[in-house]
Image (cartoon, rainbow, N blue to C red; front, side):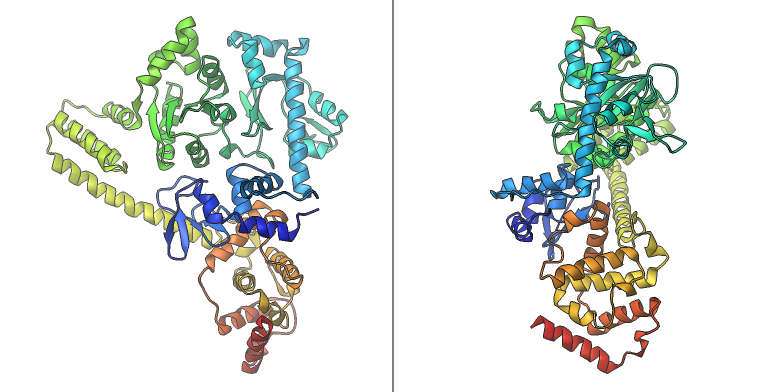
Length: 584
């Protein structure tokens, strides 16, 4: 049963969307809207727009109402997001609990993951899990650490976990949705996704097990296997052990390369360590870290792969507004190896190299030196030009000046000449950033990144007219009666636009606000597509002629024999006379 419309309406009224979002990002007024840097992806130019009743990012397409925003930024389902906002506004949540199929599936996935984590942990401490426990012992993990992280072992069996969970009442489809099981090739029955691996539960900020990582005990590939994306988990938007790191009180995070590095430094007393989940760092993960930290210490491995990962991570973290330091570990060791190599002195030695770590600019300037022969004039010029290119990306004038002063003094070059080079590069970068952001905006507005509305590209003419009409209808619900004299849902050629029209028409005819409950009734992608349409037509008032043209195109593109090309000027006048009458 859904929440009462009146409750949702009051919930939104008492949680002004601009005020709620301002708790997470800085917003500035621009015309009728407010804008800021998107909290869901890294960007230099603000493309995150907040309107009266919804938000939309022209850079990444994130969108929705205030409930959708809380769902996304706090990683909550619909029910918990409503509770979050109700508590904020001092409102009581109605006794009749909200329920729908997607919410039920998420709940079942959480329950299945929790049972799976318990199963893996029990197996680790059983004779069947001896190989896994021996591995953790060789990595010098204590029993307390194993318990703290809920580490486990997946038996080298085709169906051990699947059989166990089905015996607990879970359906095969639920296990597939959780990515704990996969279908057999024959299509009959399921088998375990993880087999013969030590297991690392991935836990969200509320303590839910949302996914797993598993390391094979043999030389088979892949060495590490991670859960695929599910209704409760997206690899690109989560971090391993952030649930531990956020409670340390520190505004600094140690960014490690993998699970074992995080666990090792945690055991050494550094609980503010996190890692990405089997993929290169993403802008979403950088934005997530910004919510809990001001500074990131990159603790990647000192090998070539680790250095490349560091180079990729730095611009993402900078774009997210984070200060960066880069750890330099002696003798090419990773954090886990370094701490263990120092024995009892490991924690103190690791703390010392953290405190001695330089910022990312110093790190990159030092790396550049290896590419040039500084004993020659050509080498020094090449190095300074490369340095100028790096410094041009620094936003802070003070920080820029510090490095310009150092370089001009060290290489005995005119500071003004270096500044001129940097300013020219900086201006060029700004122009390119603006062009890049505009390309993103055009891409979003043109629907070229659509995941859910694939029909748009094959039915562009009718879809464009249907979008425009839907935006007008939502902004002018009193026009529905007049519009339906000429078209119906059956005239829509785009199935998603047809569904929107049926949904909004039904709500308007029932006397309900068209958008009041959209967060509950549509998926994230479907909501995003609708808000993309609303943002595209925001501030654009349709003339009678443009509305008529949309209706005419929709009819002309449909398979109905009647065509509005036969509509007369008298018909158009009648259409808008009816609209005015309905508004009264």
